[in-house]
Length: 139
Image (tube, rainbow, N blue to C red; front, top):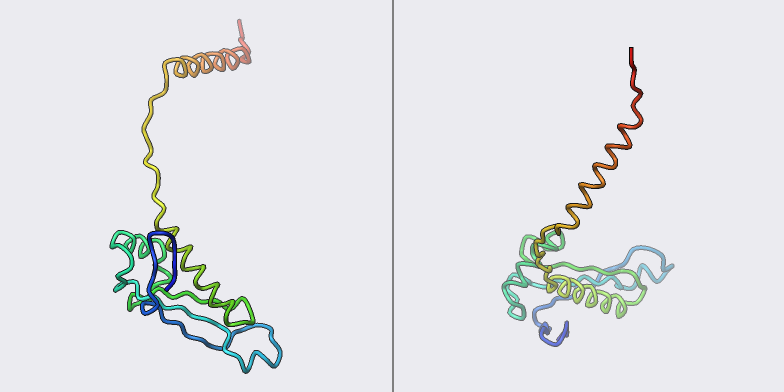
């Protein structure tokens, strides 16, 4: 069971972990140890989250979801499988927490009477400055 926050926990049967050989440095060890971790979460059929949250994850992280509707997260930062597994769980937490955030609704406001007047006064002043730069020819 993976705890995301106080309200969301994901049961272990919804998550599938696969292990494979990692890229990068590791010497002779890299050819023997399956340290890369790939996490598959069947988000399409997940009962642990609401449909609204599911939609938000689908829209925000569409590139990480495959054709079967599974969210795929990989980690191969470390040479140790345990650390990579922990990293995958952390990435999953961040994705769900990101999807939970809602945008604040913008309240439309009108400019005040004083700000309108200051803007017009500034425009008049700039116009006078520019008018003063013109040379006047009298014949």
